[in-house]
Image 1: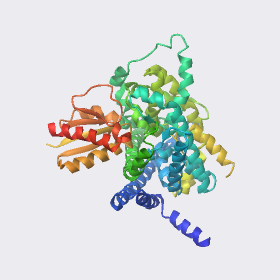
Image 2 (image 1 turned 180 degrees about the vertical axis):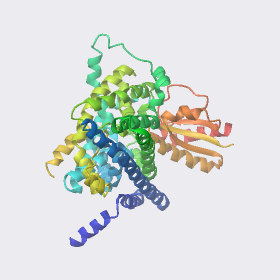
Image 3 (image 1 turned 30 degrees about the horizontal axis):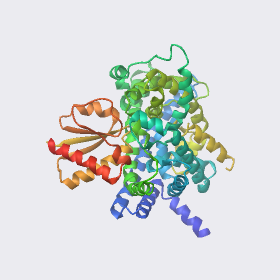
Image 4 (image 1 turned 135 degrees about the horizontal axis):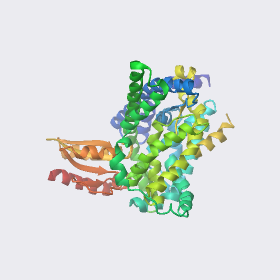
Length: 428
Length: 99
């Protein structure tokens, strides 16, 4: 036992980039993709993970002093730093990730075989939602890998059932027969939209109110581009934090913050993309196997929520939502995170809602304004376990010691994830 | 002049990686030395339309408008069988040869 715990301790001390490299190479060999692909995939993902943490370092360094300054100047307690998809770092880097992937494959194949779900979870990348939650629970329970895996599997099983309920609608609207989308907060947005749209359709005047997606994109499209949006938000926060009357140094700080936030908005997703570049080829063979196993049944093949973004109303609604959501988070009392990086998840939510609003921009905006409110509060409530998970992975220990707290909408604000965290928190 | 194929998806993270992988493999097999396959974000398509070397868009989403270059819907890469993938790859190769 002593030997075992020492070697586990040594393994964890390697750091998540090295761990994920080793784990993926082993997974690649188990899935029989061959040495070359396994090694390339493992190293690529390790690089992506290390890069992701580097980018978060930049943004933490730039944003933390600014939000602290705002707090002292205006008494605004919006001090949580938004890291959004940096949670992918927890998802692929926490020590139980390999166990979770294998457990979920087994559970999903069993569920499909027993006809408990029609959704065949072939999209291994999207396991990250469950895996990030698993990482939070791991941190919450003082490092219990087993409970983490259990929480992650539960979350993803719930995702399959939600996918069953929404698949037909997605398929019809996007003209993609046979797909299902079990991704975390995206599919939850659809469930939320069902009753709200029903209600909106019964309010006179609102029923037929719409806006032209093409017109909005043409006029305001620039704001929808991540770099531009990030720069704008950074400058606005900078003005509040450092004031406009502080001379050249103040302006330099404001512009610098704008640039740093733009860096985060453009480079964070690219880093996540490098992580995917490593993982996806390694998992392709298992996908092929699962598809062939259930060839003759009606199944929904799980795909990433990105396939839902084609309709023009998606980007149009997103552009309108960006300023409204930032404003809402700024004025709602008790909400401690100003969304910046987390805004990147909004188009995915919109993609899940437009099939229900039939592409109506106004209704999509209303639905998502309401949907985002719980995320604002829950991301504040989960900041503690969220920050702890990063700390336990050996990231940002020094800054966390000085009071840094990290949060996000996509995983930190997740409604289903919050309840699972609460339940497992009882065992902590 | 080199020929550019862009593979567009929502965040340039997952689905486009899957398609890019398959297309690159086939492009290498056909021996096209001057074809570049690039993953991009859906929001970036407009920016790439101005590039004179752009010969094709592969979209992981349903496309609701038309473009001057051929557009292929990449869903078979995500959920198709090997045979369905090959049909799509054949079409893509044919389109490359036409340029």
